Picture (cartoon, rainbow, N blue to C red):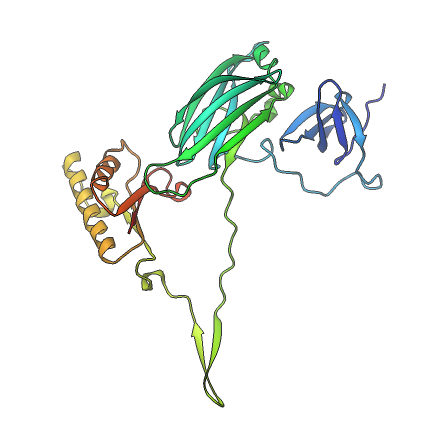
Length: 335
């Protein structure tokens, strides 16, 4: 019996389970990738699919349409976001899977994790996961996964102090268990020590590049028959008091040339003295905010800074941009 031939763009339904999708890639004569409604791709044998609607031009079966980016063909390592990852812990006939919630953001995340079995929700895990960390949600065997229909994650993002809020997320993730057995569907994700089958719960959108503003010339009438042309050029940020951000690096090697023979307490004292000086300078110059780069380390310097800020009125603070500073800087907002 000849295996049915499919083309990219064909709509198909699954032969042995509910649902369907669109052919997104041809892997081999009898193996294809199917993009499903939740925007993920899965491998299927062609004999497991039924053609619903052929949308491919028969005169040009080699499509030049770019392949759609999904969780399984996009390099997500290093992306800022919240992810659910399944890792295979052994290669037995009934392997063990660890399920991790991976928080690669600078937000605290309040979460609820459920599995869906025959349209019933089963609560499994709730709690809080701190920024830039992973949390083991569940340990399951492959035969347990086979009985699941989906998993759901509800998440609320928050920070201490002033911050720009994110919308809460509620995500239902349909599971196609056959894809868990194929190594090529496992991808690398920051904070995991191995590759996993990764679902995106929330991912930060890359900012669109703005075109550099061109220099404009504005004409203004001075008197009849006379015109004065003034070139309007964007002024440097420092020309606008109260609308700027100062950046201060508190790493000790940036403050003094030689630290040989100094104790940790002496180093912290110098860093806090510089912190206090720069904070007062920013307040005096009516800066909008000031970013203190303290690094991660053991968190001693950051905790000292936070304890000082908590005693002050008229200011708020939060973790600075994770994309720019990682988890090693605090931004103080001045009012």
